[in-house]
Length: 401
Length: 126
Image (tube, rainbow over all chains, first blue to last red; front, side, top):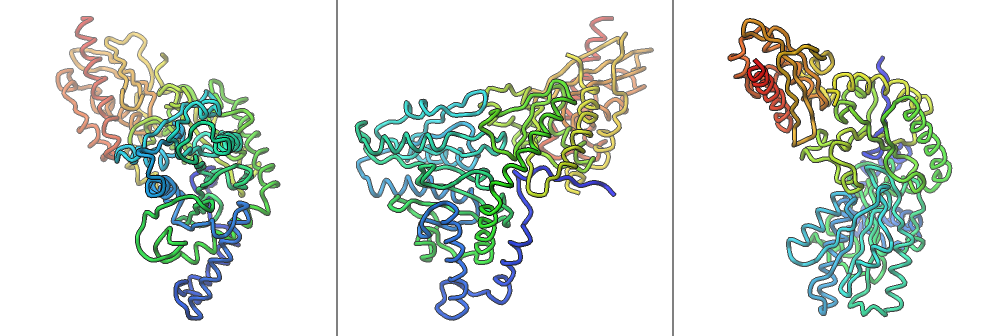
């Protein structure tokens, strides 16, 4: 039988059986609408509020600061569009709020920022990153203008895995907000996309100093279709979906009760296993990297050597194309990912690698493995054994330039 | 398997076992073409005898579709008269492969271009 080795956990994770178990009753007998006053409704309402408490606890937030959404992309859209809209209502003094973000954000952030620019309701600064993918805190400070309303920086990059200095940026913004000596026209709000961070890093909002935080269920062994936006009390936000008064009138639509329950369980499990899991996965990642570097020449590791999430190992393989590597890995039963132009529907090389200073022809050989709960040492060793032959086969086909 | 759905059986077969892959040391015509869209590079070698493609070999750095297109091209034109071979189109290559996903059609352009340039190169040298 063919082996099946899944090393694409940064793309998505399977639902943990413990998560599925707590969800099932809410798909079956406990099917009530949480807005209904009767027994069925109350049962569903209680389940949502229990889950909200669990999410709040994991983030060190208040339950009323947790908004359930359908995914991190929705949370991000709501955070950016909703805050800008909310600011315009509240602080009429500012004509066009200013946003600061980086060139390595997820498309959900970049496309939303570009959308706000096109509408003419915001001006956006896209900050560059260094070769390791990190944004400079000093660059953020320099970019702040009197009308800066939102700084949005991702916590862990999904393609490469570097950890951005969120706590340092949080402290900088807090300092500016408190001293007020920069003639700021508004408080500066701080958003982070913590989708890839939640499983492994401390996401306590006070420690990070964030006002908004987006996360997703399906990266932490909950199902696809559930996300969260943390919104600090007092942060202006205008809802982007009109309708009923669900989620503190910030996100209309009947609550996805079973998925919310599942997310609550998943985030509880994350908290239980975080330290152990981070250590275990980090060790496997190190084993994978050193094995690949030892067995294959002309391979580089991308990202930061230390400030790096434990589950992502990202490489540039010279002389072999990413999609071709993925096809041959797939035949060997291994699932991975690539940022090469050939793997993208738009035929563009990864914007993250490009922002990190890699040339398109280098991104051509991009390869990402992302590890998870089920990853074993044996699986890693199998990849280390199989990959050199795959790369060699493709390099043999390539023109010698 | 979703990978099988992405590419036809023929594409995967040529990708796995590319025909005429390699180099002709004393080639009569060569061409190296790069695909500015995605970064793929292909080099083609032809040996000409009696105005026919007597031998043909390729080297390609690229995705599955690029490698399969290169391989398919070589099987389609080997033994063919130069004029006929030079007329091969990207559509003909894609069709012979049992179709390519729309986003991958440009990969077959690379192969068609490389052959035209290799024939040009041969005619120039002659």
